[in-house]
Length: 227
Image (tube, rainbow, N blue to C red; front, side):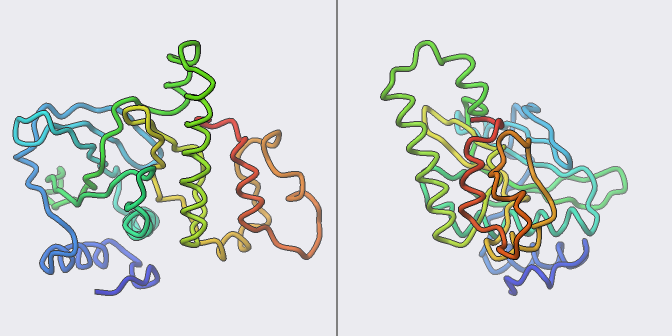
């Protein structure tokens, strides 16, 4: 089984890769019939996220289901699985558990990701609802966990956009690696400014030959996302 993202170019490649990974037990497969109490909890640009209980138990998972499986979506899904599996050993990264399936209107089997459920929602929502009750140490610990997680990603050569920060039982969890990049890939995005300008490293606007690096990305911890 290849781990090279360049080999995943279309939906057929994606299905073959997943089925091979399941057959070789590299990825765990969950029968969709074993999930109950499935409820939508969020929606993004190309996917919806549901909470679901496993086999009528109190064990809760998140299921990420994708709208349209096209070439661009396939590459983002593969990237998410590939990068997340590299770092989900870290306590502050959402766990990737495996995949499940559902049957779409065209009767084609579609794979969804089974991931860790963060019961407190986004960091922004958590702070909005609990800020007045948090002590200085609570706030410090949240900030420390966030920087600790980002540092781990950079050690693995990954840059993560910090607009997907979740909270699970007072613990920071980085999620959604579909838009994450290898550090060396960030230099290819020099002409693109992500996020809001007031929260962007001023050095990115200096027209020099020096390319952006992960230090520029770290500056965006101050980006007005979920932080």
